[in-house]
Length: 250
Image (cartoon, rainbow, N blue to C red):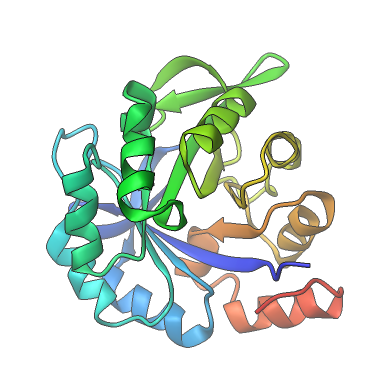
């Protein structure tokens, strides 16, 4: 069985780490470079950096900040926000990213996924999917969760797999920042739809929530932000807890 990954996320706005609820009401959570170094030291398996206003502001990701963070960590590093071209990906990889996360631009022009995968390999291509409940299904949202699309989440995940994605970062908007538990229903649907590794995001609030998402779904990773940023859960203790339930972690 694959070992499950614990992944802190740095949501970045104006060069600072921020965190909100349901993608709204952002509050400051600290210096991203300091947080990144601390997470690497604590035993995080990977780190995700999302420049959450890059697409809305129609600008590229903060390259210099990516470089600063890459210099203080020694774990896999995924960067997303404002990526629209192979050239954008090349710049981020050269700055120290190991993987890139593409969201809105992929929905707008799905061929971008094939271009990235064919140029750099699918191991560095993560497709981020922001999912909102829509009746008895889930809808793909873009532009920082502001704009609904015609894609149902599982259909879009399968299309991403076909086009060359190597991994899915799946965020439940209804759970985001709620600390009420990961979205088991959504995560199960997507892990059953694709063969790709799927990272569950949105709702992690307690150690039990991490155990539940790993026991009830095939998610290969669980991503969280505020519970790590504000010290509610310590990564070493979380891993010890998961191991006590025979959940394989690194």
